[in-house]
Amino acid sequence: MPIAGQGMLLTSMDVDAAHEADFNRWYDREHLEERVAIPGFVEARRYIAIEGSMPKYLSPYSTETFEVLDSPAYRKVLASQTAWSRENIARFKNMIRCVARITISKGTGRGAVLGIIRVRPANGGYNKLREALRAVLNPQATDGVISMHVIENDPVLSKPLTDKASDSDLGAGDWFVLIDATEIAAARDAVMRLTDNIAFKPLVVSSGVYRLLWDIAKADISAEIS
Image 1: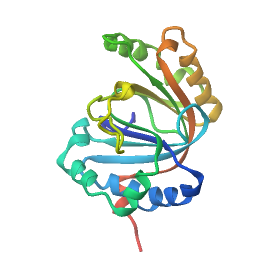
Image 2: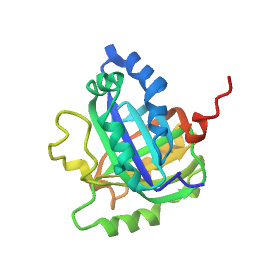
Image 3: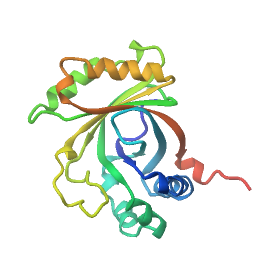
Image 4: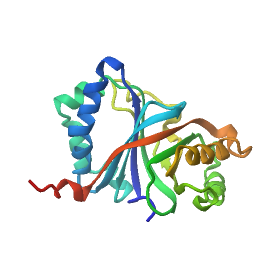
């Protein structure tokens, strides 16, 4: 099936090497499961960068609807972060926090490799860009590509959880193209095909290729057998 749900929270960040072990332990032992447990969240995935110009770590969280990402249940969790969460969030560097609608989703399933492209739509060119992406995103065109998606940031909600979250952010309205693939070469080729396209190249902010660390779905939380 295409990507789960209609909404997506996508976060990406760097962290100093001195804190990296604790950061990964926190993500793996608390954070992902805590987020997926929120009503309306469907699944979450963790990735680490292989190459590109984006931060080292990336996590997309799928939600049943976009509205879940501004729901009382989600806002309550944000307002009552655990001490471990506050400690790690304060260490984030180069953070991207994307609260988005999934507007295009083609293909079936998810791959072990993710290609990602950050694009900045021209003012007033949203419909034109969306239709252009809809026309060129074709998972069948490249062997090893499983599915392709577009998520569109909400510029009001897409703010990092930092002391400067109230600052204006030129990239708060950016879009992301996600490419699920089985192999690095397939993801890289699909990314390059778009970033080298004369129609999209001026809009590209950054791109990268990531490998999957692990994922968790809502059903996994209650499925543990002791």
